[in-house]
Length: 222
Image 1 (cartoon, rainbow, N blue to C red):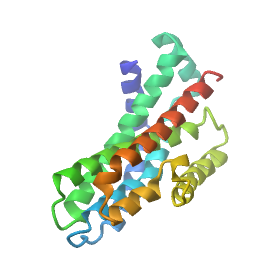
Image 2: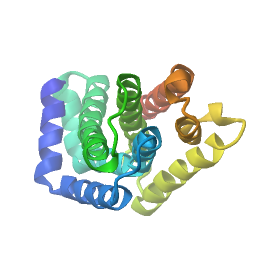
Image 3: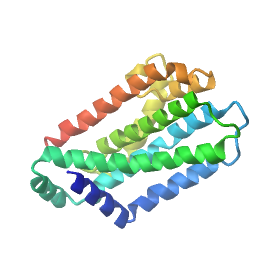
Image 4: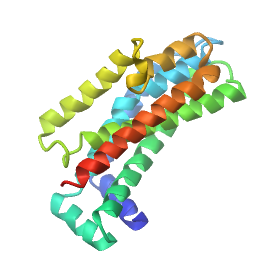
């Protein structure tokens, strides 16, 4: 399974699809962090970056899962001993790709986006937010991949609409119905990110696991 995950990552890189996500990430970060934020805004800047990079991460996960031809995916399932391992390898490779891009976004924000140094608590909270962003992008990208949504046009529309739905719903009192992205921002702006992270992080993790579980269930039928 690990070998298959590495194979898929290598195929993603050699296909040059990784360059699309990388260039889009760099362009977005250059715009978002064009000027350093003043002292005291570290939480807001770091949180906003974790949210804004999310659709790019989802696109990267979707592209990685779509790189492998359908027949090759069937052969991979046979070679690794079952569809379950093949699905797990794909998700592992997708998360590895999104984690690298997410780490780049966080490093950029820390080095070029803020003026003051964040406190240890805020730094830990930011690390967890970027990890959740990578996991959310993996789940959203997987659910909009070709094996689930064969139409490329419908797939990319579903990805963008899914991200917008997260933003809209998380801005209401029903924020617990999705990954509460806006609640992340509100907590950061109010200086309550560290205190509210356990609750918000638990909701986010739960919905990421539900999304990944749904993808695994759908893959059992294809």
